[in-house]
Image 1 (tube, rainbow, N blue to C red):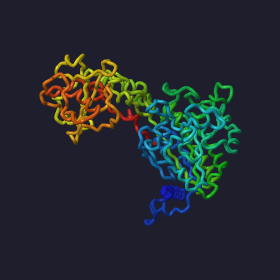
Image 2 (image 1 turned 45 degrees about the vertical axis):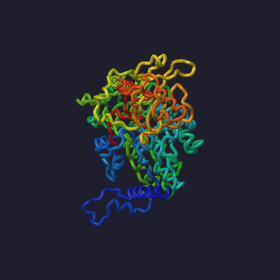
Image 3 (image 1 turned 120 degrees about the horizontal axis):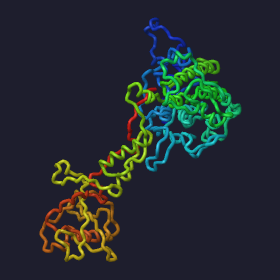
Image 4 (image 1 turned 180 degrees about the horizontal axis):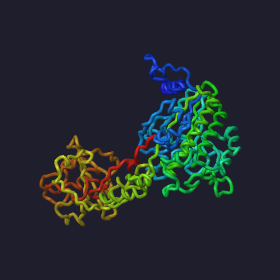
Length: 611
């Protein structure tokens, strides 16, 4: 049954990809098209031969407004290949609000949003322990030949769904699924559970996999790393591709809000400036430059040849996530000249990449797909300088503001513990515990008689009534209207909290106990009580207003329950009013307290980013 479902899931996908592969390489005139020309749906079902290779590409943090805004400066066969001869979408949005790298990469080849995939962000906190969690962290596995830092991404263990590649390898075990990226999450999540991921190591300048996938690298990976291709970028200059006038639509370099670490915030920039030679700092500075994408595509070419991707009729999937644009946009903003120039460099790299695939795999034997994991808004400082309402939010301050507001309303306490992704973790234990962890509110509760009729209607689950009887020193000194009961074993004074409900459906049954048990032993065999209505008082006058009068129905009972009922039976013909400020619960919360909250992802505020 599962195999049939997966087959129907995969066949339309491959058929659609094949239809895209068989599309004409140049645009055709719509006027010359015959009326009987089949539409896109018919073309899908006419496609018979699936592509040998699906090249799935991601540009991390690329907004569509940059693609269209700089379209007049593009190379003829980079991004322009999609715009002129492909199907593209200018108004595509994700359905989740927290648009970050891991969440976006988890959706692309699975179709499952974070609530299903389990990848709710790049990192989050465990709602019970508040311990940090990383989307692809798995301490059971390590990087091959490289140091593995705590919370490093090593496996798709947290990924709760399967991808197109997982289904493909289930149906065709001979197919290969490879994921490559400058980020661990950009390689692991698109590769799925049955693919193989290779990610860039910022400490060594190598590409490595983890022991989740294999014990040691294939020979082609070792050969690529042995050549130290990252070292060739040491001392290389990042220069603008176009004359200065071509960047008039972008924000100039060196703005005060732009990061000035790493390679600086002005062009031209020299990689490794001030360093004696290649090292961890230099290797880390490669990614926030155009050379990070150049190095990633060089490894992708080695994977095509080393794994013989697209060499036979079984469809392979190669996922390449280019991470440099995201690093540059975070450091300088998408409105900056540095981001503008990097986009033009990336366009030239894509043109060279497509030229390589045309020659190696065959222009008609592969399908190229390109998307983004999220978009980018303008830098807040730049937006504010343009008259827009913008600013930055400190998560620690958000937690403080939430706690201040809740404490003013419900009592002084640390209600919100931490931010987790784009949500807030509340102290649910404290909320449930109530009075044991809160300070008493100054709000006075309204008397029951002032409440509306609708508010006085209570469900059976809330129909219990409890009080703590005042214990007189002796039964003779007990005041009228109080209840006397013997002290607990040992002669010490104690509390006796007893529920005296009657069965809701059978009011003539004997009284039953409700937890917590009184200090006096009521005996074993007490089953789980059911909800009952409030206990009725015996309204008959009593000769002895102090001593415990036997309950008319409790006399029919036997054992410790009936005895306990007789000890605390009502002694006043009038109904006792509820004590002011004392809720009807064995563990009463403070007056006026009560917070409704979601488990751990109550969104504070986030905008849906454009692809």
